[in-house]
Length: 273
Image (cartoon, rainbow, N blue to C red; front, side, top):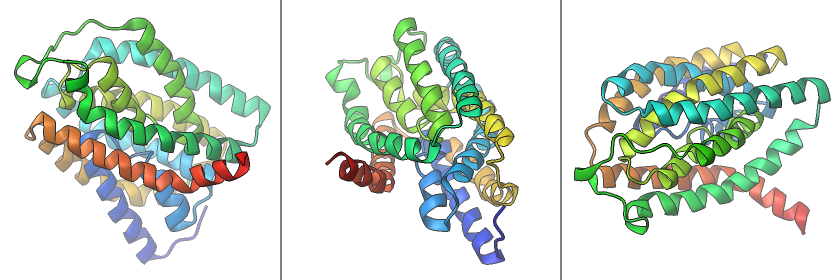
C-alpha cells in the first residue's frame, strides 16, 4: 500500500468526483479515465490501479443504479443477456490469472493499446448510429426492443475478459457496442443499462483482484469521497439532456479516454515495428 500525503489524497478525491460525474452522465470513465490517471498521474502500479478501480467502479455505479431504474433507463432483458456472458468470462479469466500467473502488466498494455483504437472508432459511431442505421428518433424510442441474444451474449463474454484484465471496457466499450446493437434505444437507456450491468461485473472482478492483493484501500476511500456526490449529480442531468447532446458528450469523453490510452498504443506500435 502506498503512503500518500493529504494533498495527494485531496487530488485523488477531486479526480474521483470528476470521474463519478462523467459515469453518472455518460456511463463512461470509471475504467477508461481513472485507471490511466492513477498509473500516469499518481504513480500507482498497474495491477493495484486495475484492482482498486474495479471495486471503485462497482461501488460508485451502485449509487446510481436505483435512480436509473426509477427513470426507466435500464433495459433488463438486454442486461441479463449481457451479464450472462460477462460474468462467466470474468470468473474464467480470474481462474486463469490465479492458476497460470501470466505477465498481466504486458498483456494489459497490449489490450489498452487496442482499446485506444476501438475508443476512437466508438466515438465516431455513437453520434452517427441513429442516422446510419436509420433508427427511430427520440419521439419514437423503442423501449421494449427485441434482444439480440447471440450478439449480446458474445459481446458479454469478450467484455468480461477485457474488464477483468484492464478495468477498461464496461463503460467505454459497453456504450459503443450497445449503441450499435440497439440503435432504437435512447442514449440515456443505453447509459442506464450499461451502468447497472457494470456493477456485478466490476464487483466480481474486483473481489478476484482483492484475493490477488491488488487493492489499495486508502486510494479507494479517497476516490469514493469524491465520486459518490459526483455520480449523483451526473445521473440527475442524464434525464434532462436531449439525446443528440448526450451522444455528443459520450463521443467527446470516449475521444479523451482514447487520448489517455495513446501511450499504450504507441508502445504497442513500437513493439510491432
